[in-house]
Image (cartoon, rainbow, N blue to C red; front, side, top):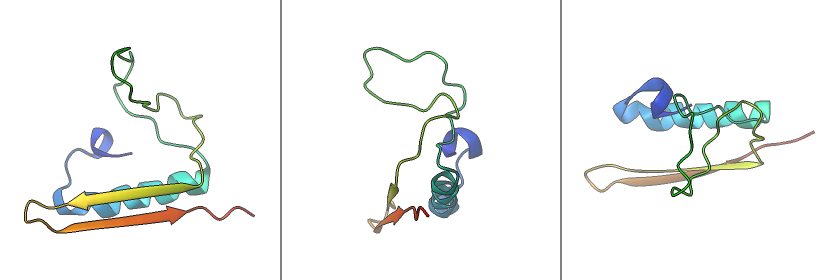
Length: 80
């Protein structure tokens, strides 16, 4: 659940994407990319097309502003 779902949220996009990652880790699956029906064989991107793709155990987010500020965060799932 990122820009394809929520459009461009500007400065709020980082925290919204982080919240979506927390939800994906909690639910154990990724959110699908909207409007992505046919993969391009020449593009090696592994886009999530359905809601059954497992989320894995960690998520990483990196952001950079036009002013040169940068941040990175890595979160991990706790499985019981």
